[in-house]
Image (tube, rainbow, N blue to C red; front, side, top):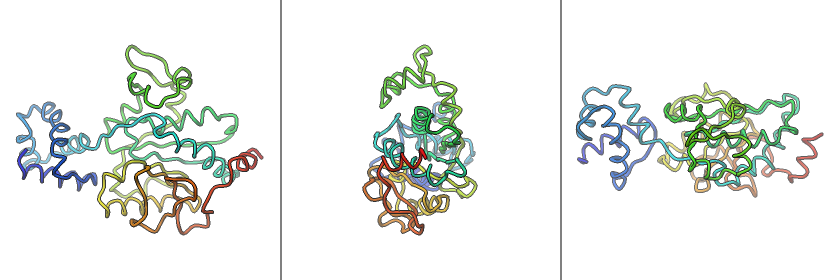
Length: 289
């Protein structure tokens, strides 16, 4: 790929998605964009670059952006965040929301839906404790294509083998040819919509929990700060932000503080919420009344 073509694509992706692409990732750019050239019947990447420069059709720009920002996901990825949610976050929020009996959860950059569906299955397994509660789960992504896949709830054998407990596979999936179809009951627990994290997030409404894991690693520092501060505005004082294991708010913003003893969980810094969660047994007793 020509240097000026790479620079053009790099700038485009930074402006539209926040993705930082370094020169050593030129091979990734080429491999991800080749399917786009074939779809549009271009002779190669040079013609794709020329079309983007001269005509800049929005549909083409969107496909280029989505091709570069589609990331892999897996069910119950890293396990611990889901254990934290079940043992600490959910019971604490149930105590605080006892009057409204409603909790909103946002899975940002959810790709093909494994993270929000993992949460939905976990909540379904805890339905006795959650009787009378409304738990809204919203999954968003920049790519409309991956969201269509998420809504369909169809996964390959490889995808369901990655992190999915066999008991949940048997209980909530049925085999359809060479794919596994998630049950309608679980699918209807999650709503999906397109969302670019670089746009105004105010229309998203308020959330009690935001999962934004393994997303910030693709941004430069100013973009990380911008996204974190926008998300802080969507959380109440006792709301919770999840980041990936290799991500942090340190040096980026003072709007969040880490929750003591719970790696990857943060709370709004200017709120009165405690710096740590109560012990699991205590929160269970309170939540159960």
